[in-house]
Image (cartoon, rainbow, N blue to C red; front, side, top):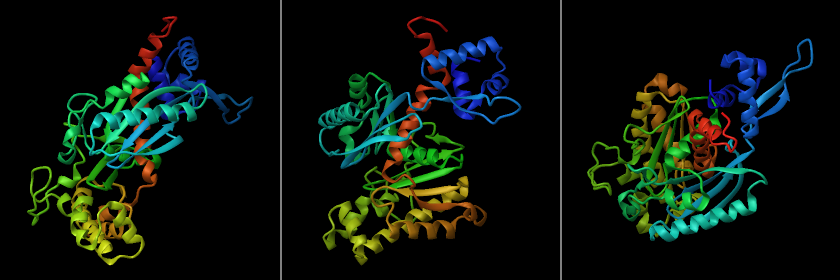
Length: 384
């Protein structure tokens, strides 16, 4: 068992005593001592509290060191980005919201994000904590080339953009690129901690979804999973921005709601939010209709995959008229046995779901066993 595999044991089963780790790893005592010493030198594990006492002194527990390194994450939306520093348990150490405009040219937006990220690291990163990696989420798909994105038609000037490059140059660390709803779903799954099947639907300007099964993010064979807004709805014929007709997004996305509410002077998503807060009937009815449409489509998805949790997030997805109508449709139309077990509600982490998910993705990628073994081999002394 390699150094990376020993660390994986501690991350998934720890904290553990040396005796427990010896039994699980099946390594010789001498080899295990070397593995532990090396991982301690790399500040990947540490001695924690003492275990339960037996006949003698309680044994010391070994645990994954979640504080020795940090992640830097950028959750990018149409009008703002949330930038966060977290520890390796995805606990947020510092957060900053930055106004941006994705309709503008990509290069200035990326430069603005890099500058803000540097400033946050300089002012809020814990002393002695090394940056492990960078995460970037976007309302589009991972590109077919690593580090790029496949943007929706309304943001076509971002399509194919190598978004990872400026962050790699600026911070000298690997960059994880993810769909925003995927990152949200993974963050909510991490927060839930119970390994349940989790669906998260984000409703803002568009509609996206993420699915986590048994603690693992499902991205699909082409990494195109979660394009929930482009599921076809029988009876709908309106043209969609994706080039198809009758997509759910044509009646339930933020763009669709703004078209519907334009005669009432509603011109932005904050206008819809304010309308709901003030009890505006037109805004409430529009959101309820969107919730029923989304819930109807989700009921088929739920019947197929039997999730334990369905959560809604995004600027509009957390509003009462939408959530209440979606819940009613899901629970009323899903196969009864499945419906009895589903929790339907809002995201637990709110606006910070995606940065939590990105942080967890960074840790999973950078500390997989092969990556840790490479880190061990690359030490200045060359010891393995």
